[in-house]
Image 1 (tube, rainbow, N blue to C red):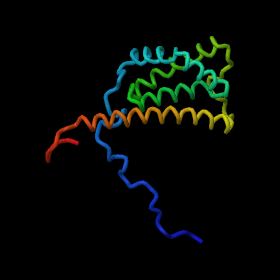
Image 2: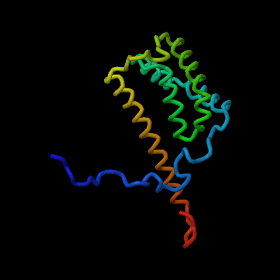
Image 3: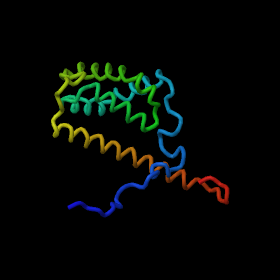
Image 4: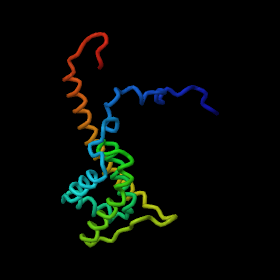
Length: 162
């Protein structure tokens, strides 16, 4: 028997457009607008010991380096570090850096997954869990910045911006 009652659990159309313009990190000017600046940022951030330890764990799970590089650059696009164009241009450099780090640690790696082979569900779940915790940490920082900005805004009046 078909359920003919409407579902009210779905998002309202246009709900994603209700935030103030510029309230999200990807709606603001990029922190690193050029390829050279973005490469410098990645070289510094990827050389930390904590990053290398996490990288080795992820590579040991069998995650291809190309997929990992795409995930890294896309997360930085969402955080407003650089735009999508710079991310696409920086991706080969990120892959080369990941290869260098894996070889210096003596870890076997896969650059690109072969056609028809998939990562096991348990490995994928563990990688996604690590990414979710990082995203939650970043969301907490963004929420704190939004509340600080809201507290600082003292303008009142009919035509003032929110």
